[in-house]
Image (tube, rainbow, N blue to C red):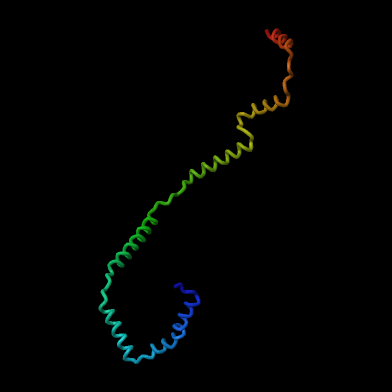
Length: 140
């Protein structure tokens, strides 16, 4: 038989409605009852097997060892210091490259660049075949 939601609510409702009365009745017990409860609880605690605290001590010791190892490794690790000379040479190289780019080319090639520019501005006059022959005869 399958219980529906309504049937479950109807079965549980009387239990919950009687709960406040039962709670009051449970607390209205005489002092002798509560003294007996305390005595039984203390006897259970006294006879309970004690846990070994060795596992807890081992765990704390391991955690402390890991923390100390991390501290030692962080403080003894060498810190790389950049050399001042290397930074200066890098800066000088960068300045040289920037100056070369602003000039447009190496200083030694400036005459060749001027000649190439002059040639591109004044293209040579094309000569006919007979003029080339005459020019060769004159040179011999």
